[in-house]
Length: 287
Image (cartoon, rainbow, N blue to C red):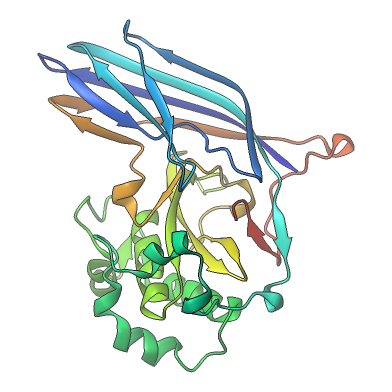
């Protein structure tokens, strides 16, 4: 089991008459991800409302904030009980056998225009044996052809933009991989978490976008940016693309500061707590 101590600190200045926020910073609860010791502290005397999306397990917090400064501090202990699988055993699932809740992740979405990448995806990956191996080839293609560089994209950058510009950050890598998978009729979705293991030269500790692909009847983790240790990904939210999993969505006049994110692994092998590491097995924390 991997245990992560998570700390998130956010800071905002809010203009009159106030602003509304929807935060996605609570660690999700799934069969393979348990959450304990949660603490939430808001600097204003406001009452947050937390609800869980029944389809994704994303926990969304709504806050109506008053003018002035607002700080949000969230911490939790997150235990990751990974499902491990042999990649050779993971086949693509025929469309007529997909669960209804998975079908939405076949369709084009705002940032993942898979309907415009069909011919390209077929030329590059259509000849490959179907299954985990083909998805891994997509990951490797994205890593070879896209350069990771901070501040090279913005909230309007799509998978098509990344394919043309050949540069981006984690969400851009994820959008391109998702679009390529969907273009091949492989369900894929974005997951939002934290970037444990990233070289500080690439990025300071931050939120992180990665990919989950539906293979062999469950969702498996991939990091097309190649910058993190997937075994330490803490799931915050999942969705069609980044529009569904923003850590904060704001309505009103708001000035933001850089988020503070710290994810620390607790290692105690005698008690079954292992250090996050790269492994050959496929990893899943959600059915």
